Length: 156
Image (cartoon, rainbow, N blue to C red):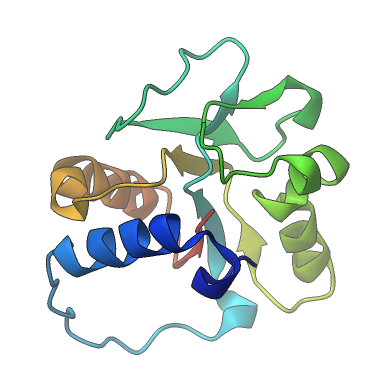
């Protein structure tokens, strides 16, 4: 993971300024979840991943793409562009950004109840997360309709 101290001072200051300008979001009410061994788990990634047949994400996009649980990783591409975005890990193991194989292993061992049939990908690097409220709620409804108990957020 890159630390601010690893960046050029101008880039580090830019990142500090962007973080300071982000709105504060209040926490929602705490709920007591099901035990993991009984929970259906889905993945939400901010890597801008999508199938080759899907339209690519554009910079600042607030929409999402749906990835089936049995997606062929050879059919998955990244639209996320940044000079600070290293694709090497994804090229070596796509589970870095969409750990669906790891979830299947956990389900096989009984550590989680099951893996969702559907997973979701957003474009990361959002300077104002409030812009994503509508699509976030839409994905929440889709997760609920699929009886997902737990969504694993994989920020990239």
